[in-house]
Image (tube, rainbow, N blue to C red; front, side, top):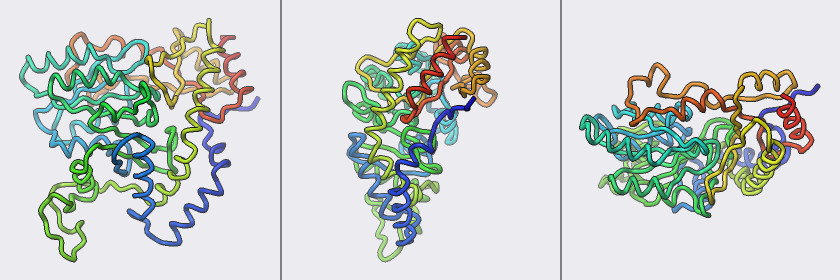
Length: 384
């Protein structure tokens, strides 16, 4: 019995290998390994794909969330509202500068941030007076967009910034619009397993105006002087003239070159992922495995295909015995983990999050999953 891959990166590499080899060779030839020409070329192409005026690359998806918080001077006394049902990075960056995450429950059908629970959490924090509401981070969990029209309305009502954490969801749309249409910034990750992944670490921030792009550019390169800082750099390299405390968070040129080639087929791969998701939905209809719901008008990029099952661990063991890998995203919500359990929780707690953590199971998912392999997965689930 052949073991199936959970994500088949090799299949994509076989398709793109000649183009990727040539792209890497061009970087080796010109030698601009840090912030080379391919970085700006990729940023322009990424912005165009994501319907954004500008994009700024960085070292990873975690820094992509941290950079806007730094640019907005979010710090001590500020509250940043985010889901607990997410990867650590979403909340991890918040305390870096002294701010505090406030964990908010998710919707039971999409697992994305619950607008009603968000509103209640903001009102409660304002009433308590200890923290000042500053930012909302919505997560495009498993590849689908959050309810951005509702979230934008809430943020506008309370004067909050909105970050779309699209680490898993870059390329997703709602009524034909990408998350940046509503968010102040959208962030993403190019971790290899992501729908648009490189061969290492990488990330990016999509932004709407030049001033914030310049500030982010400064922050990603050690707080270098940029346009608008009023610094005459003369003949000096701006990175040696520092106007703010920054970090080192640059996307390697080789990774940018690889991502340019991957982006060229990304739209087609989203369609292929949709076809795989549709086969799962059809094949599992009527079984004990509940298929995920996509928000009305939404297009998911299906970073994962996650089912809900009352005997999740039993099903996972059964599938493992059949040579079918699975994964759990996420077994312990953020607010129940030791470094985060002392932070505030939204009004009413997080019952949906806590229930989902014990029931969700991710199945093999990638654009090149063959129908016969998928039939094997579906048959094994139905036989359990």
